[in-house]
Image (cartoon, rainbow, N blue to C red; front, side):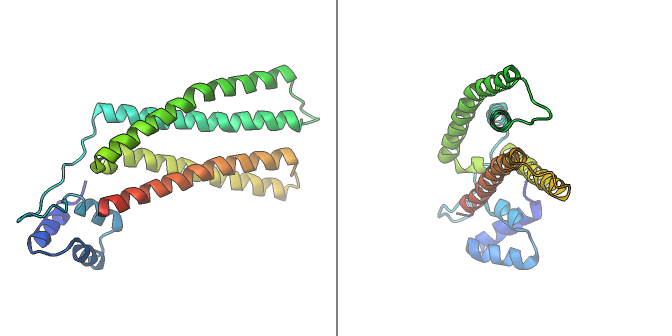
Length: 213
């Protein structure tokens, strides 16, 4: 939620016929962060009227919470089992001669991972599509608190995974324990976490650009 002083200033500036770009520049010079400025300006629409017209503020409803938690929950499940399936296939293709896993165990892991993806991933796609449709119909939903929180939590998890993946790689390099199986697993984790981090970073920037308009 924007600072009350900020929204009061924005309203007064718009009443004085200042453009949003001029208001943005003034706030930047005063030291307000980009996120605070976007949130403050998002309170008012660009409708031509004698006084600034407030935009409806998104409310965190139980319905929105359900769809966002379902979407991100199935995303996390899908991400985990993509890595699990990839690891199982790598273990099957490049078995560890010192700790060879039974073929039946590997096949069971593969079957379970495939089953989880068949159920979870389509649910993720359907919920993501529904949320995208809602956001397209009402741009103020981009400013939803639960949307921002869960997106940033996802970014944090992806960043932490990338850091841990890098640390594991360096540790094994220093120990001279690099194998094809290990390198492939590191690449899988880096690709999955990197894709998630890149996409949701872009998503937050897209939300900010849309709210500036």
